[in-house]
Length: 594
Ligand code: M6R
Image (tube, rainbow, N blue to C red; front, top):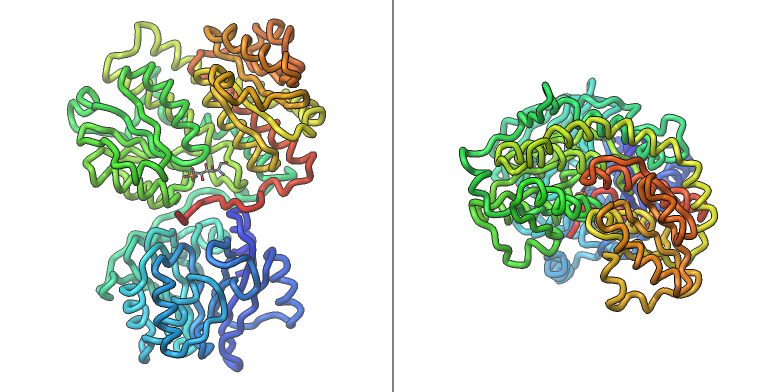
């Protein structure tokens, strides 16, 4: 269990715990605030924990501060039922009040503890029946693991809106919120769907619906290599994943380019759907949303159809205009982000066709979309996304070319030119990565700036959003991204001597316009780090304090190259600040709570 928890450390957490059934002592629970290493030391301090069955958990605090009491597993008052929970029980206050009125005393401030206490309340000799009663009573999102001392040969699991995967190992059955925890023990897995309950013994798994009717599940084989989830000699997963981008992009593109054409075998729409499509609604969060921002410029140019980009957390509550002629393009690395999943369900309910771009095979968003295009980035462990972003962007180009051909919206010669440039992209990414020492040097001269502004126009603006997010996520520096032309409408008041402005000016037709904005900030004392293409370096150098370049490519492909120096810059700045790069504070890899 400790090994499994270590493999999930990348997801972000603040406390950890274990419950093991020991034949003599019953349920033994060890919990601690802090890292899995601290938990392991406590286990060692007690001379180990012997047992054949148990539950482990890492908690990312929502209700109640990170503390030993608030960490999982939570145990019912009689000490006989242990529970781990991901998600949020929305009606916990009402249930807690009810249980307290019956005399139950709570040990934590969490929403999750109500599950353990409610199980004890309903338990009448059958833990499965108690679970179904609890599931009918609780509202919210959950992935639950349950261990009852009265039936110590089995675990019970249940899910709604939070991922759970079951593993079929040699003489053992396992359960986890992410396949990464299981891969060392088995490649045979099955994903629980919403509303399902599973019962696991060492050699059997039964899956039921909410009324305990048996459900047949399909087993899947995980085909990625365990080394993909290891650092392979790099100091951090983030750097490893940055360096893997040429391969990840190549793996995403190559199978879909055949005989000089883009072939998306995975996608088939009803006849005329694309021609009659009224809009594309891109739905995503965080960096995936930033890919959506770039997609707006790229797809509108190639398809001549309106593209609206929505933050998933806003989309679901804004009464969105969606029709059966709308294509909802859902972008998610994990395929489990709860806001994106909920927004996707809303788009589906309103009649949209859902096409998702997802990295994790078999994830909930992939399973629930009408069509899915997988990015072949391999497992991404660092919380700050890099290779997943790059492969999502590569997928946008493939969609633009494929749909553009169907719609006939690409000017003559454009298809072949863009496709040829796309095929050169992995080599050009290698070229950008080979300049990382220069970026490391620039990070060493810039890392002390307390405030950083990223500016750019058009696609450069979309990349600026991602550059800014990367920097703040892992280095904790304050940073903002603005459309360069927008700066003078208010934000320029923040520019003063010592402010660092990262100016992205790779978009040739808008170069002079962006340079005017660079001059404006420079004359107010800002230090400017300018990113442009090699032929424009000298022009940039006349004003910028420092310059960085990327090779020339098709203008629509520039974001793929531009983002790499932004990732490396953030990485090296964070390194110089001594930050916990792969596991930045307060962040989780996959955000499965609202
Ligand atoms: O798994 P998803 O792509 O749905 O995740 C969306 C965001 O949570 C994610 O991109 C987040 O912003 C990353 N930490 C960015 O590096």
